[in-house]
Structures are given as structure tokens and as C-alpha cells.
Image (cartoon, rainbow, N blue to C red):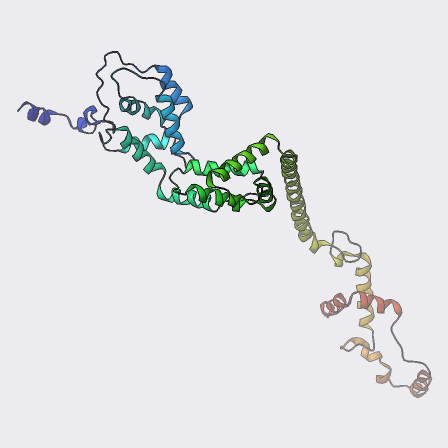
Amino acid sequence: MASQQEKETKPLRDYAVPQVQNLHSSIRRPLIQANNFEIKPSIIQMIQTAVQFGGLPNDDPNAHIINFLEICDTFKANGVTDDAIRLRLFPFSLRNKAMSWLNSLPAGSINTWDDLAQKFLAKFFPLAKSAKMLNDITSFMQFDSESLYEAWEKYKDLMRRCPHHGLPKWLQVQTFYNSLLRPFRTTIDAVAKGVLMSKSINEAYDLLEEIASNNYQWPYERLGIRKVTRIHELDVINTVSTQLASIAKKIDKLSVNVIRNSFMTCEFCGEGHSNDNYPIYSESCQFVGNTQQNNPYSNTYNPSWRNHPNFSWNNNQESSSMAKSNFPPRFPSRAPMLEKKAFNGRYVHAIHDKD
């Protein structure tokens, strides 16, 4: 009855406020019988500093668990199980997405360390990631610029990051041997005094480890030159890209200026005015216009037809006609021809405007 009365008298705003009783951790930690058990702050600080997992795609959940267990195994307490220590410390090793995932699990759904580790790996090492890493192992290839030691370490790192790859040891050795460049395979066969495939599995694996270790202790000179060359090539590429960008900007500006000035360029003097404003052109147009007004040979009507010799009557017409027949036909002077040729389009336009 008392609880029922409290619910009836409880203000409405209290129903919208989260209750502490409803906040529970997803980990149900086992009870500890020891009275003097204490986790030192230095251990927690070490985990928060050296072992952190955020749930990013490149984070390795297997490596995180291994590093976490190494820290947890540094101290023991009488009457305290390993699960009690690990379940209490593991949340301090998570952050961001990984911490949000742990808090999203149902309250009290994790009771043991094995259960927590299995759910953690299933979340951050899904089947798609396993398939990709397995494909990287089986299709491994040595790069042209890689030494034998670099290729061997990279291949072993792929297998470490995917410990559940399921590949037998003989297939691992054969896959790596087939992925090497021809000069390296020849060197390995020479060291093996024949063919590497004629050795047993352990002998072949140990031989690869020995040759790669020797290659690391005596690296070839191309290793240092290759790194310097890459840096130099990167600087050259950046310089060329900057120069090309600058040239492209200049070309764009030049194209805009040409388009803007193309309608204001004189064809005769190159100045920034139209052809109509060219002085000699204006005088030539006026001269040609004046000659057309009294040109008796024009193909349009004009007042000078009355002065045409064929339309006039006088006694000297016959003699004048005979006298003119001894001379070649009249042609326009050289200057108008040049002006007409130079201003052919403008000349016709000027006549039409004048008419």
C-alpha cells in the first residue's frame, strides 16, 4: 500500500529522470573473499596508458587481449581468482566505440573472462575481416623493393594477426617460398644445397628464419638508397604539380584576356579599337564613296548616268568613240584596287550604307 501511494503522489517530472537502480553493468563480477584485496592505481594507470582499444578497423583485438593479460599476470592475490581481476580491469582498457559496445550489452550478461573475451573477439574480429586476412596470407607476394627479411616479417605478422587462419605449417612455408622473387628463391635454394622443397617442414622453416635474420644483420645497400629516392621523387612530384597548377592559372587568365580583347583589336595596327576607327580606312571609305557617286561604270543607279558618253549627243561622239577605241579599256587606279581588296567586306557595307 505504501509503494502504491508513493506512485500516486510521485510528480510527473520524476518519471522522466533516470533512476540509479536501473543502471547496471554488463559484467557480473564475482565476489572476493579476501578482505585485504586492492588494485593499485599504478596498475590502472598502466592499462589506461599502454593498453587501449578503441574499436577502429585497424585495431588488432587479438594483440589487445594478449597485452592486457600480460599486465594482469604481473600481480596475484591470495583468495582472488584470475577472472575476478580480469573482469574488473578490462573496462579500463576500452575507449570510444569499444567502451560503448561493452555498455550496450545486457546487464549482468557476462559472468566469466572466457565469455567476455569471446564476445569481444566476435564483435571486433567479424567473419569478413577473417576472410580478408586469410586471403592476404594465401595471396601474399613480395614487393620489388622489399628485402627477404622485410617480406618474411610481414608474412609472419599476417599470421599473428589472424591466429585462427587454420593453415598447416607446410602450406605456410610453400606459400611464402612461391611468393618470393626469382633471385631470392635462387639464393635460398643455394643455401639449402639443392631445393628448399626437398627439406622437411621444420628444416625449411628454420632455414627461412636463419636466412632472413642474416639478411637483416647485413642489409644490402639498395635499402638506404631506395628510401632517399622515394623522398626525392616525392619532392619532385610536389614541385611539378605546383608548377603545373601555376601554369594552368596563367593560361586561364590569358584565355580570358584574349576573349575580352578579341572584339577590340584592330586588324591593321593591332591597337585596342575597331577597324572603323582606323584613320586610313576611314579616309579610303570616304574616297571610294565619292568616286562612286560619279562613277559612270557603276552597276547601280546614280546621277552620273547623265554624263555617260553613250547617253550624250554631240557631233564629236563618233570621232571621240574612234579615238578612245585606240586605247585599252579604262581600269581603276591602283590605290582604289588596293583599298577595295583590303576592305572588301567593309567596302560593300559602306556602299549599302551610303545608298
